[in-house]
Picture (cartoon, rainbow, N blue to C red):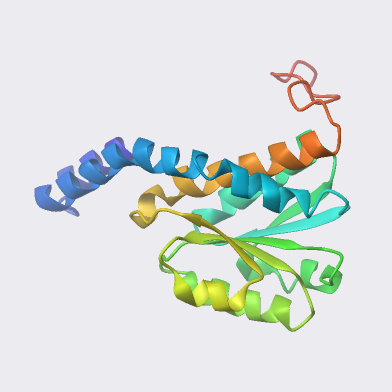
Length: 198
């Protein structure tokens, strides 16, 4: 999809060839960067151990990170049976903020992109309500480390490709919580590989 988008942007004159080639090169580096994340699976497992007994979780993201938040919450629900909701950061004040306390941790997806400052604002609001915040963020982001309780670092990349890197640690996090809760993570209950009933 990314390659198609770049090709169409070139045809429409919205991206020059140099910028397109730089993005293609970065896309080629994504598998290696995903490997880096997989190599830190033990630290994600250790972190997951601390959340095995929680009953609720909030996932927040903005822009391209909102679908990542949806995926993270869905995986946590499906394989650990923990109630998890995903919300766009801009909608946090319309419901989920009322639930924030020390018993409902928040997983924020916070890449350095055009909505970064707005996500920092969301984080400040959660902190003001004594909420525990985990963040999936770029490994070189020192500012986020000062604002949240724990960072799951991912390699930096172009904002277009952040979902490749931010989704993976959320899936690992859900997997380890499910396994530690004794759930059958390979065959979650009541799930089918495809929808067969309308």
